[in-house]
Length: 492
Ligand SMILES: [Zn+2]
Image (cartoon, rainbow, N blue to C red; front, side):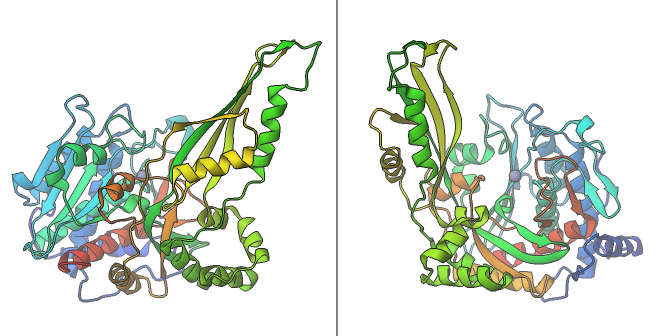
């Protein structure tokens, strides 16, 4: 399975250069420039070609290794570790480790040693993928397949493509003899998707913290590079995530025969309360990140929407503007905490008055708001003391990492060097990533990724997951340049 290519630095061969040209020119998104422009930090031709070749080999090896929950990540860890050792990393800098009670949930921590001027940077990449069934797909999901300018396979965008890019970039930096100002650590981890019993990031920080200790975390899983109809729009810098908080509502009655109905039917009682909840809108609350987001996002919009976003960011939005922005799911969820009913059950027989009725309400809480304040807002909205409210999934509070101006500037310079005109957009996501484990530890964590994916054709976790051949090559180059840039700077 292992290639003998690129074990040591050497000039690019003609074949490698040709392959690079094919890799960077053959994509389906030919509308915008896809060939990275040359800058001081650019991989030279001698290293760029081997890096791209190696990235494709790594992607193939990772996709071809089934890392769904049932299989685990240990086999992928062993394959990657072998490659890092072959690339010249010292044995003590390539650490394979798994929880003793979950030997298939392996993790790999690789370190490129710096001068120690600054504190380490940690990159995170989960190796596990969501299940995929052969009969649902056009191709075998566990074989990397190239077709018409696309690479198909489970995990190519979430997130084996990013894993391959990080590994290839780190090996390229090693090959060049790059000595960063701070250690560059990449942790390839288990069990992000299944939300599982052996989450690698949680486990590494709980049991092997010195190995992964850093002052800055980059987690491409939380990043987003958005394009529409072949036009690249933005590269996100995710600073924060909403927290999940789930309640159960319950109300009871003594019941009785359905031929003798009473006014106290608890199904009606709960239905009325849920109707109030349907009308509940939490107050608008912008964070440092969402304010910047709306300010910059406005540049991509036109007309009324653009004006509304500008007004919101400036704090001058009137009620009509708030109403318009609240009517669109994508903007509404960035403006406020949300709670919605997701399950309901009640009653026990066709001919009996119900005795017990329950509903599940799931909230997504903005950073900076407390579970207690959400609960009291809910109680007020339900406005019925006979309805009991209890937390069934408590929120894991995860503070916002500040949208630090120097990091933003570094990212902007890398982005504009590859994709002129593409803006950087600070983001808060409504879903959760492994950064939920690092932010509460006080580690500023940012979701950054340069793999452009069509916003109207999201295939992560879905069938026929794919990435453009050129988009993948760009991601490799982007990852290389950003790693180089961040690791060369002692602090950001
Ligand atoms: Zn992911």
